[in-house]
Length: 266
Image 1: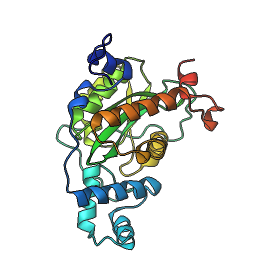
Image 2: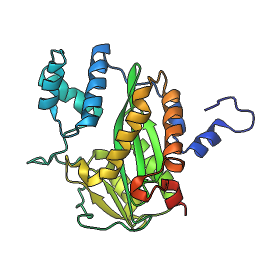
Image 3: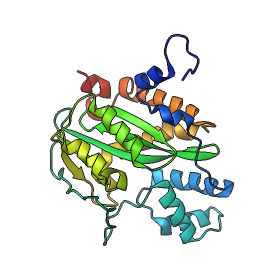
Image 4: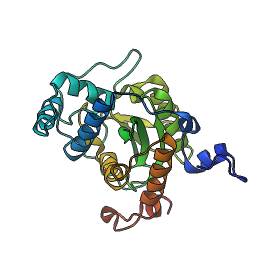
């Protein structure tokens, strides 16, 4: 991003990159240096083994020499917005006015673009803090339609990413997890007002949304873990460049070695 670009305004640059202008002014969320270090470790181990819950992650950290208790690890996991991927015996209740929708994709064969879109949020570490990333993806082509960064897990950045994606087209089914952002009336209302069927994963089952989980793993190992972003603008520039590479240059074996853009934009 170039704030003093002579020809293109900062607002227009954000539109071209598909990012949230307000995120340029965010500062990373604050935690103690020790907790930030633990969160980095948790993020890396969870990315490798998303079936690890707070018990296993606590034991893993102790094996690495960190004297932590499970309560602390569970709090950090909640702050990071992660949980183990096995089904839970009792589902947490949605917030007031929130509705849980059934999972509509069991046994469904996805054969065309704009048949199914999905979204998810992931934790992005920085040198002295962290931010959250949301993305919207087309399942058939794996094309990332939009994304946004935020210092908090509030609804606004998810809603902005959704609206930006909908400028490209309209899916038949939109799938998400049961996070409060995606079960909110404002979010589901945007979909239902356009005649889009809403589908939601079983809680704790990221494998219902496997394609975007693979996207996070690739992004972190190929970009985020190789860098220590000092500022949000650095994270935004690095992640934006990686998404450009992913969409337009990175061939996928499962797509017959075509790129997501080559399939989605064909």
